[in-house]
Length: 609
Ligand code: ARG
Image (cartoon, rainbow, N blue to C red; front, side, top):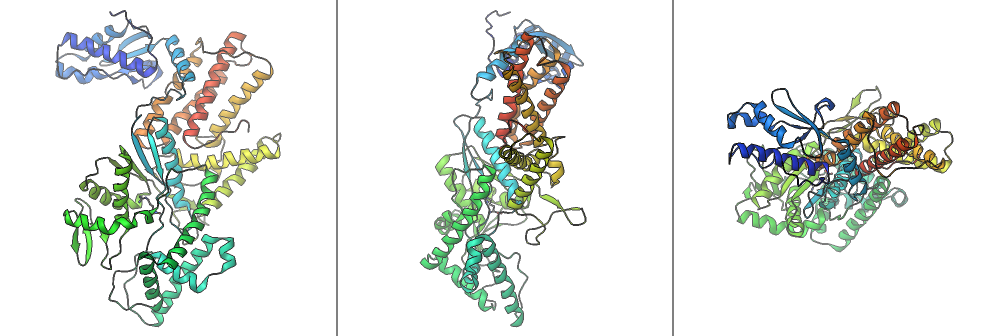
């Protein structure tokens, strides 16, 4: 057996080394057999009884090598048993190898993590770029609850991607261009209430837009105009020849002027954008969310006409009843990129956006954090983008909707238009107020300032965690009491776990108790905690791979549970000084991991609560 071994730096380095040794042992026995990889995988054991790591490749290799799995397992076992990080190894079941690591090695790994500026998270993606497109609300409309999931999930992904080494471009693809601006310009000139606009600009723009829609409908009714029902308020029907109301005709004329660069209309549009962004920025500040770029749809407008022509020339797009479409294999409908009236669409802009992102960043991945209803849109856009030569991974990071209790206490997916869904800001106010009331009840010693800070951190944290802790594909029934509960997989539970750790550390410091600079494992409870801490890197990497932040929540929730059991299993402040010093250091690592893990989800922690 090779005696060269230096202590591996980390758990994953040890896994790799053991995996290579095991593979080597098999190749020595079955020279140059194609089925044998250069490294066998050592996976985390599914139960503590099975050790720390498990090799299950022998089961798969048995057939190609014409051997019994347990015989292969024996070879694997002999190859790793005397490695210095291995305390013992055993063959189990039909041919698994269970590996138990030495306490000393686990303690050593935790020491490495404690000193690592990346908290032990491997920089596996260094040098690669990922674009995350999230939040992306629409101008002149409030940012409602429909955008909260995108903002929260996107922000968490941004942080996690940066943590695994990616260069991240966070882009807020604002909906700042579209047919609604013609209507808005007309309504603004006719009916603006200056005072209301100064007080609540977005509210006034929404009122103006709605007034346009109702008044226009009344005009149509009184003129007895026949027309097909419109698919949505934002889309003019394509029926260019049909009779239109004076209001709609005016809106179309203003839109055309805007698109041709009319100065007065551009000035108004700019105003809508500015006031809307100012409102959105207040919300982003509350949430602690930032972006690297905010190009918005309008930025791509100058490119759309030539892009459509190029796609026609390349045969990627074709004419269809006056419009231009791109056929998409396997999709129920083609992607419409130019209407019969010459205007461009949401999808046209998305194609121009991909083109620019590829040119500017050469990203490995581009993620769109947008709800499930836009699935078809992205299926179409990605298909066309690939035909255009985009070879990066385009991913629709879709998520379910959020349901709220209606008057009868039943959960329903409402709509802002119907008014049964709170606006984002109201939602945050509600959570913060609830958190303030709860904090006051729980800890009467908090000063007013501390109370306000705890309420903010806990309220916002609860909203975010409630969203992030569920697999994003699911719909969420939003229950404020549950989100703010101190029990269960909630932000307050995690934040409390952190605050409790900090309170122990403060107490130790005030009483002059020493803290060690490493852990000495002498009890199973200590080992369990160390072992769990070492899984942090893997949890972060899983989130980066799957773009599903709930995996990190699950890990942190489990860690909080392990530490809570730890208090029942061994004394800390009352332990004898050597054990106490070691445990204080261990608990500091837990606090550090909870804080850092929550920060990767965009969630802060209070020092006391
Ligand atoms: N503004 C759109 C909406 O609110 C979302 C944009 C998402 N990003 C994109 N590149 N299409 O529905």
